[in-house]
Image 1 (tube, rainbow, N blue to C red):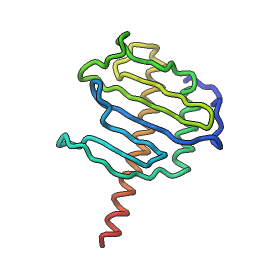
Image 2: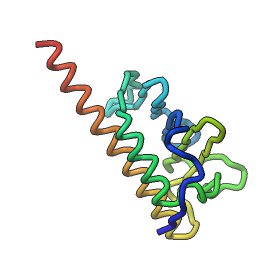
Image 3: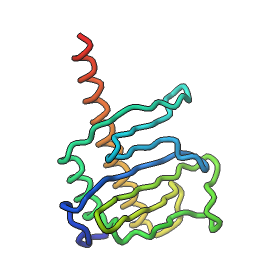
Length: 148
C-alpha cells in the first residue's frame, strides 16, 4: 500500500470528477460539484441525470484517496506514449479539486506499471464506483417514493 498524508485538507475540498470509457471517448462521467451523472446503459444509450453524493461519502473518498497514496500517483498511467487510448481498453480519469490545487490521474486498465500502483488505482476506482452505485440506488428509491 502506498500511504502518504494528503497535501490537501478536506475543508478545502471542492469536488471530484470521475470519467471512464473505452477508446478516446470517456462517455461515463460524474461531477460532484454539478451533480451531473452521465453513463452508457446496456442498450448503448447515453443517460444523463442528477446524482447526489453526500458530504460523508465525499469525505470517505477523500480519505480513501489519501490512504491509497493518490497524491503520489503519476498524472499519466497510460501505455501509449502518444496519449491515445487503446481501442477496447477502459481509460479512467480521476480528478480531485481543492481550493488551490487539483490532482488528475489518467489510468488505463491495462497499465503495465508497478503492480502496487495498479492495485491502488483499481481499489480507488472500485470505491468511487461503489459510492456512485449506492447513490444511484438511493436516488431511484427516492424517485419511486415520490411517484407513489
